[in-house]
Length: 245
Ligand SMILES: [Mg+2]
Image (cartoon, rainbow, N blue to C red):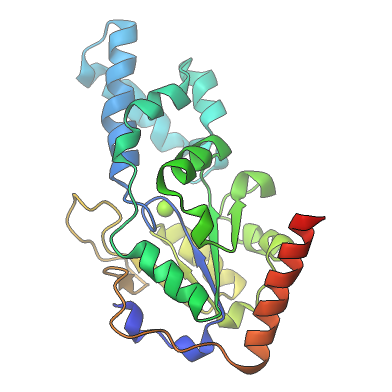
């Protein structure tokens, strides 16, 4: 699937996941699967394989919960300060090719670009600092502030309170199929998975959802018109005013 194939005249708002969607998942894969186990092994006098064997089931048990994304949870359970450890490999944090150009094209077309992430606020801050992504977005929503991960259908209900949208005119791009299913249950009409969350790994198919191959646009996006255009302008104006006050 490519972005040019989407029914753009029917899309007003775009929700984008961060890790594995806008950002290459290589950083996170490397951090959790190599860098952290290596640090843990050194600290506890273990071999790397033993450290991995100890950590992997603990990671697997937390998958799909907010705890999995919570740096404080891992800092407590593993007794490791994760932020400085992440800084050590922060040079690996990178946007996917053409992601920045796509975000610019989205906003130029009058559509709303919203980052919706399960990432912990400290992780989010680290990644925003390294990618300068915030200037390309209309709004950033962190699941930790809503108290539920995106994998739960109620998350999407809560999201409406901070980022109202018309589900029928909303596109979600997310590399996590459980998140796409929850958004689908809430009525989000346009759903795209990601074929290659980690650019160093081969593409994959995601059962049940078309998978985006890359962010390259061949044609400019058709601009929003009429009521949709006015409503998105109004949202920006309100947001601008609330920042000033
Ligand atoms: Mg993701």
